[in-house]
Image 1: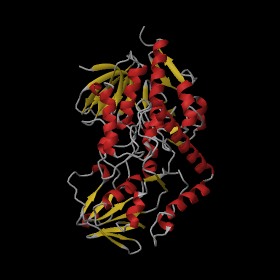
Image 2: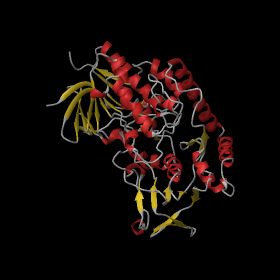
Image 3: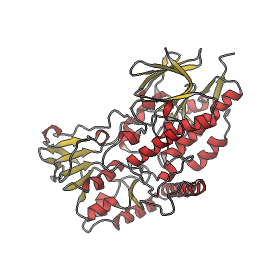
Image 4: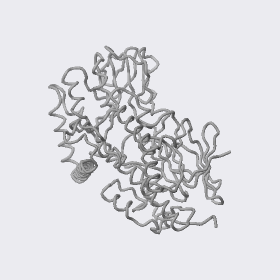
Length: 479
């Protein structure tokens, strides 16, 4: 026997809890449930437990607009973010709508019944009129793991941050962290607090931005103050991004100059902090309070740039002959990107291959009825876009109710199909994105089939734009 709700949300992380709040406040007549594969609220912030895990966006824009971030710390640690999400769910009665330990593995749409049938890994069945995937875009079961030459010869321990063991002891150990992204620059100062020495080993460097860890004007639940802070940070982030894309050489120089001022004597900017790409071709790595540079100046951490030839019994040998001694190696080699939690989807018995679909308004797929996938921005806080998507889903549901419509299906116009524009879903050159590009939905040539990653344009379009915009096909099934 299956349980039916109007809206089934998949995922109880930051996006899923935000979606639930919007559903119960803006669509109070609609019933909903949340399926959560894990046994706890929090999503990313419950999964990742490696030392120092923190946000890489400021919490005044990554927090919920309806529940102001209450602390002065702009870049919060994982446990604090997890508690914030959990408290939001409990205070708003959302927690009792969550079904834990239910990993959605398939979703089948029936046009005759105008409903989805969702099955979980343990064989339970749920049906819904609208399916909303708040699953993020990476695989939870494991990250991207590289089979490094000689890894079986290493006598120490090898750990991926996504599966950080509770019993891992790194005190007074020599640690090598492989990677140069947000995870690596977060891990290094946290590990360096007790490790004998930490080396960040990177094949190629990334851009690093040193920002204050706290905002002295914050730490209040006052909604007006929170909105002003949020608006200021949105404007600053947007301005920085636009300037970097318009004047990439100047932006790159400013970023490198900022790093050079923080480095200890004898550590050159080139090659260790001179990326091969333009700013924002990949996300910037934020270093709140300059903690990475502080442990480097203290001699507790260092950076090496080079190619790995092989792991050895006692560490890693690079192609230039350099040997890095290690007792522990951390492979911060990235995520495995997947579409909507890897649910196998069908529409009237026909499999949905995400790679053959185009994304509509950054949230729906062409020819897939009554379905949305919550995706955040790559150049700003995830929640800015996630909340716009959830509010648009509510607008769409209310539109269907007002007009007594059962089904809404984005339909790719013939012009878009004939143009054969081949734009990846995510506009980053990062390795984890490029590895998955061929498996993800595509973009078209223009809005609403092109993702703009621009909050200033998306805000009016998603909050005020027409629901019946010529790209959505509507249908009535029940009389």
